[in-house]
Image (spheres, one colour):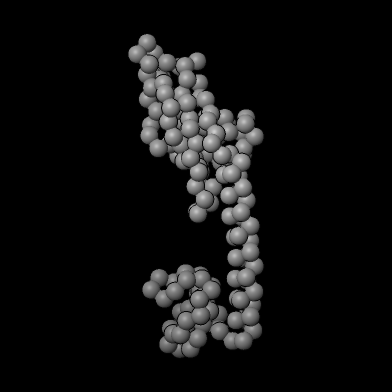
Length: 147
């Protein structure tokens, strides 16, 4: 029995795959659970169209992410922090502060997509990674300066 998977099924395949299964497994588990549909001519056309549209949309999202990375370019941002006599900062530099600094420069990036490569503990220059898309990652310089 041929079925088209509507969701990822461990050990069987991924979403939109056409797989051959035993009839009992298909009728008694995959179809009632909503994990698959019968692979007839109509359903195959529908899935092919959905895959085509999804790939077009994914390419557009990736292109937008790459455009944002190109606009950010070799950006360096300054994050002010309270500093003690030894040069160590009080508190910590967070991704929220970096996101706000990027927003002030005109780049709207979610703070959850930003990660610091090393934890800033003193005044200096650090590197932050921005995950714009699963295939588009960008690095920026973060300068921690004394207030």
